[in-house]
Image (cartoon, rainbow, N blue to C red):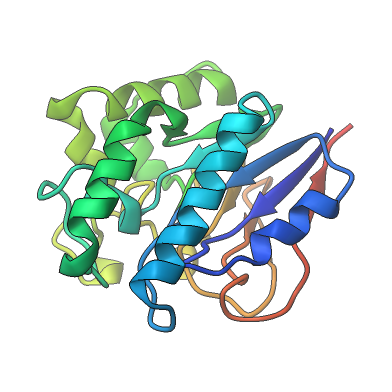
Length: 227
């Protein structure tokens, strides 16, 4: 199994290079929108292209939500940065019409993919026990469908200037939270924390990858190969 791990886009169309790769699955780790570089039309067109890819290949493309995405999909329930009032109507409509195409987490074998990562104490507090990566992902995705629990996914820890003890899977900081105390028993692929190259940390017997570099460098898209 070869998985193209596509980091935060923020309007960048470099994800299209993954279409030329010989892979079995594509996982976008979220943050499709908001940018310090691109205008509204560029961001919107790029996002529409991603949605089109998902609709054309529903079983081989997984779209995960990032903190920049949920602030439009569930406006005004989530706090965020980079919010563009000028795009609210268009993005809220697009996210709303395509809500079923998105999820919080994806898993394959020992790996769990989320936007920002799963800190041990956050999982202990909000998920509790789970029977392997697939069960953990099932519980995370169920939280997204339950308004009373959805807000917990976007908890912002002290490391990111928030008021919560630890960041949830939309806000966990790779350097200051995830790699310090990751959820045990799972390997992870995440984005969120900015990089200029692929990040890899081996911690507590698990491997953690950070793929949030597409918008900040010309490094190639990371392909995770799992036999």
